[in-house]
Image 1 (cartoon, helix red, strand yellow):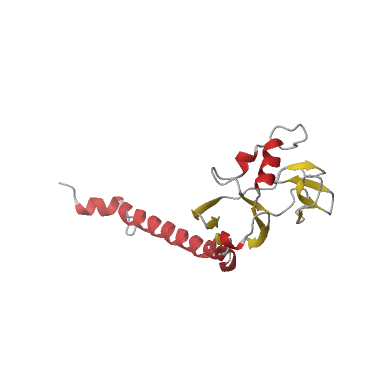
Image 2: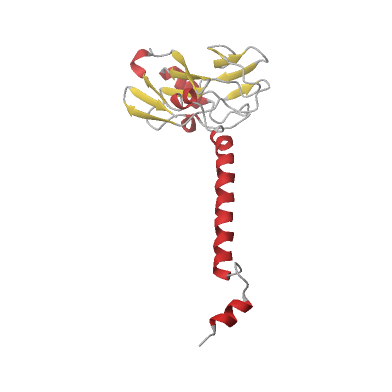
Length: 183
């Protein structure tokens, strides 16, 4: 059996290994809690603001749009084009699917939901410098960016001018035949 007096002689008072381990663990835990308390406000400020979260997704009633027309709504601080395309506009877009003048080749079918070719949903910012293209202008009957002369066709594909990419198609889904949810 171990002699308590000999054990006390080999470990001076306050030098108990289990006590020292506890103090180290407690100090490290307190330090980690302090770092987390200091870092939390910095991390929390990177979250999107309430007004941005409110616009994270938007629903729109499609019955408000006549064939051949489009509406522009605000989504995530950007213009969003929702166009109700006519059969002629769809045919023109499909006809040009394999045109050599497509800078960013994409078929019309890749730019709308299956079975919903009449509805085209696009972010309304020119891919050159972020200007807002005007509807119906340009050489291809789609959109025209007057700032630097980019021409988009009826599918939102860049055809002429300095823009490098097609107008962006955001994530969207049809909630019904008359309602679309973007975002």
